[in-house]
Image 1: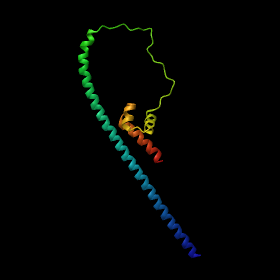
Image 2: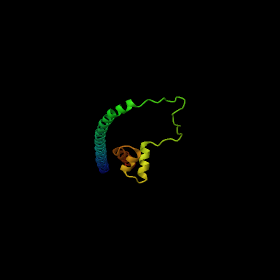
Image 3: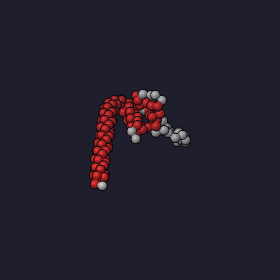
Image 4: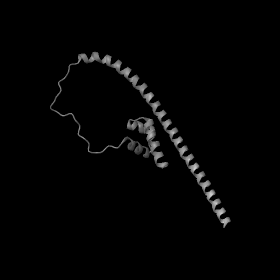
Length: 145
């Protein structure tokens, strides 16, 4: 009887050690996934910041050119006479009853058709990094449940 009790206690001890080790492994896997996700998001964020800096620089250059053009155009505008505006006609376009696809859906649709990220960004008039992020998030969402 004492031997059976000893074997039972030993089996329980081994079971607790195994469960403890599995819990530690599970926790380390969770931490690793969390760290990977944090690094990935940091990378995406840095890419977006870099694209924003580039966009701001481009907009600043365009604004300088626009200001220069506006100064030249002001002289031309002063010489042109204003034309009367007809108020009887409506200038609004008819409202389309067809629902629009979201940007994410459009990006994924074009990507599924085999277009490159650059082509998608040009076609949809969005940032290349934005299109890449949408595709990467979609991949991660469906590859890592």
